[in-house]
Image (spheres, helix red, strand yellow):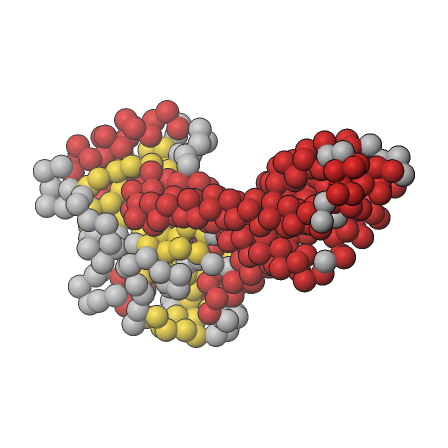
Length: 384
C-alpha cells in the first residue's frame, strides 16, 4: 500500500503529460462505457429468465406458436384449468403488440379482466388509487408502465394509438418486474374486439398460479394433457422459462456481446499499460534522482502501480457514470413477442465494472513498476 502523503506526487505525474493522460482516460472511459452497457444487458437477461424457488406462475400458450398474433386460445379454457389440482388461479390475457420482432420500441397491450388485474397484478405494481378507479370506469382506459410512458412521452389524460388501437392513459404504474414496467394494461373485452371483430372469446395465453412451487411441473403436464386432443392444443411452462424460450434469439445475441465486454477489458489493460510504459520511459532519470533522495525501489514501484490505478479509476468512473445516466434516461428494454427484457440500471453492475477497471489498472502497472524498481541508479543516469 502507498502512504497517503505520496498521493500528491502520483497526481502530479498523472497531470504532467496532459495530452497522453486525457487520451488514455478517454480510451478507458469509452471501453468501460461499452463494458457497462453489456453488463447491464446481461444482468437484465438474468433477472428476466432465471427462475427462483419462489416462482409460482405458469404460462399456457398455443402449441407450436410463439408470436402473440398466432397464439389463439379459447377463453373457455379458464374453467377447465381452474378445476385442476394445485391451481390457485387463472388469468386469461390477450396480447397485441406493435411489432412482433425484436425491437427497442415496442408497445405491448395486455388485456386482462378487471377483478383479476387488481387481485393478481395489483400486489406487483404501484398505481395511484384515483388512476385505478379511472381505469375501471372507462372501457378504453390503459394503465401504462413507467418505462413505456417515459419512452413515448405520455402522461395521465393523454390518448395514444399503436397497432391500430387507441387507448386513454388513465394511470402510470411502477414495478420492480420488467414485464409490468413496459406494457399497457387494458380491459380484456376492449382489446378482444379492438383487435378484430372475431376476437371475442379468444385470448393469447393464460397465466396460471399454482399453490406450491413444487407443483409447477405436475400442473403444467396436466394442463397440456387436458387439451392435447383439442383443436387448440397448449404448451405450458414456468413464466421465466417461457420468456427464455421466446426470447432465445435476443438472449443469444446478448450472450455473444459478452465477448465484446471482455474485449473492452482487454482494451483497458492495453491502454493503461501503454501509458504507464511510456511514462516510466520518460522518467528514468527522475527515478534515479528519487533513489538518490532515499526512495527505495519498492516505493518507486508502488508509485507507478498507483499511477495506473488512478488512470483506470478516473476513466472507469467516467465511462460507468455516463453509461448509468444514458441507460436510466433512455429506459431501454429489449422486446420480442410481447415480452420485455429491461436493461438493468442496478448500481452494483456499474460498481463491479469500476472495480474491474481498478484491478486492470494495477495489473497494467506491475511489469513497468517491477522493471523500474529493479533498475540501478547508475543505469538510470546513463539512460538517454
